[in-house]
Length: 482
Image (cartoon, rainbow, N blue to C red):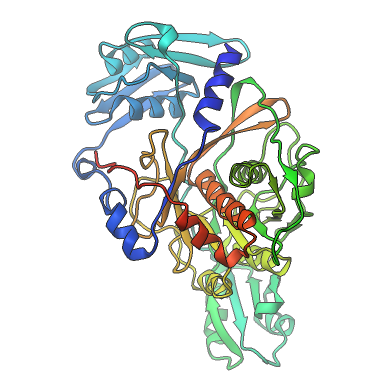
């Protein structure tokens, strides 16, 4: 079965990518307003709910408007099972019950569809859903990416930016305020101050507002970790066959990858990765689990392979903005972006997002985009229209995710700030097994890799990458209104 699974992953994830990108904000609204401006109309009046109690094996459900695919995506997320569906078996699911065992619950949810659950001794159970025969259940159903927890202000911290030419020394100012300087962006005159208590930070804000040498005072927000990368069955896929080449133009293209710590790639790919930098302290990546940063690097390289014919001069500059911490902050995201640019990055990949609007981060991103550096950022893994930052900032290319049919994925943000849709799936081989990465993070890595690859093939600089991407557009997808 492992070989069949691997073959199916290759068929679904390794084929040519399709995408759409508005030629401008206006064109985006014209071509994609049907599918990006609002979630399904029924979502405001109907709440579908399913709770899978894994400790007891019982299920509660009140489902009225999910289609079969959405139902199975939720089952996969709730159970961790690997699910296979006979293609073209989509219909609306309607079921309501409480505290049913898994078998009767599946029967109620799946209606007249046949199914079988196959336990595995060395991995998750496999669920086959079919109408005619189990052998035809070949469409892999992937779990919905979990939405990131909401961003929160860090109550005992402030971001202080001093005016250019200020004679005030930040260390002396911090001492007078009873704070510690725990982050520095000297080139921006910006500093992260940490206080003993929230009340100390509030009092310091008032003092700083009266200081003529202080340009701005901002709140520092948490930014959640990216989604966990899931191991999937099947023999590990072969490594990418990407070859280095000398740059054909006047510019060395470098994609700055702001993410979690990077792990070593296979020997044939190491020449494409510049030494990793960190703005969040030292971290030791795990040895038996693929990190999100490594997965995004592989995804960018795969896009490069497809857009350059297998030989590229593009490099990736990893910047660790998480370190050994569970979350990062808007200060570290901004610091990571500046660090990447200062070390040669001329395209930025930000496969991350936050619900909090940070004027400080926006100002940093504005400075970068005004230099002609394209910034690609993830729109977020919730089917809402509310903005995600930095994706929603002007000048940023906000990327949402498509499903296998080219429609906007059921989990993905479809707000009016979204400028691009790209596939939300990729399979990455690591340490002898395949890992599935899914979400707008993956779509963002595909987008930035495609842009870099197109510019590299044309011998152009990074400031032409988005224009080249626009010219390579395929037809927009059909409406995803449900």
